Amino acid sequence: MDLYKFKNYTYTTNDLFFDKPCEVIGVPLYPIKVKDYEEYLTYATYLIFSKKHLGIEKIKELDLLNVLIVQMAKAKDSEQTVLLEVCKLFSMLTHRNITWRISFENGYEFIDEEETLIINKDNFNRIRTTVLKMTLLKEPKIFEREIDRKWYEKALKAREKNNPNLELGEIVLVVSQDMKYTIEQVLDMNIFQLYSYYTRIGQIYECETTRLFATVTDKVKMSPFAKKIFEDQYKDHDKDLDMKGDTFTKFLN
Image (cartoon, rainbow, N blue to C red; front, side, top):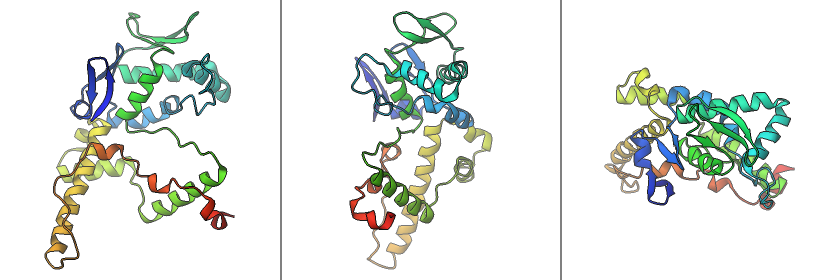
């Protein structure tokens, strides 16, 4: 499965699983390790919003990176804090010491010590969308109406009540125990590797369980031993919840 393509260069889920970096227009992006994932999430706010989220998708003169920094600086009441956090984020992703500067043509730019690596308004969105795929994050849903948002949140809570999401540490525990790895070995995986192993473990147990039931009743179909793993990480598991709220208005009032 392709995650990034530019000219003759392609970065796939195989590359990500094999822990290879992705190069986006001269900028190397390294997979985030499990041990660094929670720190990464503290800075991921700078990656999850598109021009549509900021309400500037129809204004060609405004670019995402500069508007994002200005708006976040207002929200945090500190431009310096925002720039420091963005530098930390890009340092984590590129494995280089990233600093910032202001360019007359491009506004905010983020560079390494040799100034051979530059992140600015021209390549930021490609970097942003690629990193989201590499770290299994998605942009927040945009709802046209408040009733749709209320229904989605209500349905999401109902689903999580019956099938609660495991915390990151619990998933690390499952993978460590099942694969007989030490915690340190699992923490050194990248986040895509972790969730791929976790998905595979679930597939195996599902196959074994359905096989047992299939021996006593023909009403149970045995789950296949081998199913897609990498593609499963990018499925929209909330798709069934993304419904128009008109039908459910009476339940929300």
